Length: 378
Image (cartoon, rainbow, N blue to C red; front, side, top):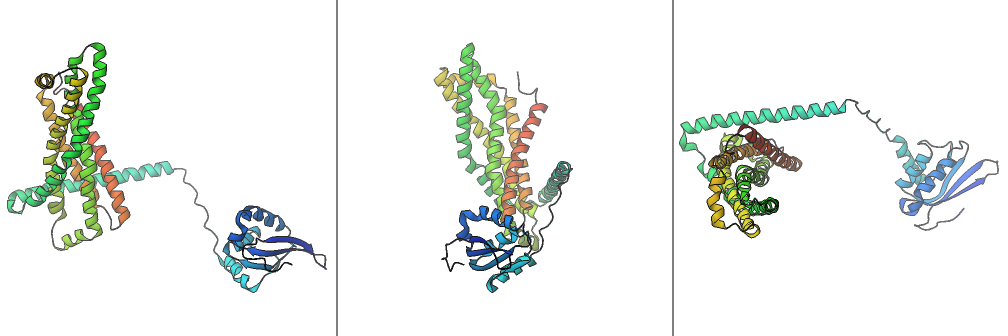
């Protein structure tokens, strides 16, 4: 039997026949994860082959080092029970005693064949829960508005002004950049097609109606939902995590009146202004490309724009901005107030808020398109 073979020497298997004629498997060396290395899988199969002989004597006294990985390797080869004939060193006995006392793994859970219906049902109930929460929050805001009309001295003017600055003035830069690029792209692609039919003049109609009626309001709403909506949800969520909302409740300050209403009012005022700004910048981008591609002068473009686009399209776009702004603020505050006191819920709530707001914005735009399909179009 070999002596101590060093800390990195792998295990060696040797099958011998004893004086009594019985087969004996002698294991020597180190039975550790580091020593086994790449031999782990082949050795497992070899040990399992030897374990099929129930009368085989296992001699592990030659193993100098054994860790949990080596003990589990042998234990699995023995089908998780000790062989009838086993010789061990005393210091290795505790490893197998612990493996014997380990509880059996739980039985795998059978997959419910109706799991798609279960998942769909949970989604429907979750949607219904959010819808009820939004309706309740809207009703509470209506009651707060009636109360503040009767008590104008309690109107949170400073909170409204601060939210108006954050959601409106600070959003002008990004909305102008994106609006200008959208105008450039739309004008460039449209002008290439119109040149094929000699209808260059109709670039004014295409840009005016598409930007003022659709792209301007939707683009501004999506940018505000991703920028300001997520900020509102995160702000309320952090207040939940730091227990500031609980402190306001203890002091008798209603959340809807001091936190939600200023955001809804401010975004309802700021959104039509942001829509007007975004549409104007997008038209400037389209006008620049129209002058370069088609040779339409700026003065000619501006003089023909009122004739090509009815004023009703502008009011329709501003109306979309008011509705989308108030809905975005309401959804953002709803998800913010539902955040739990942990960081995982904060991230999940913010993500759900942005996704829901953008989805609702597109739904609102579709409703406006259907309801006002005969307004502003010649």
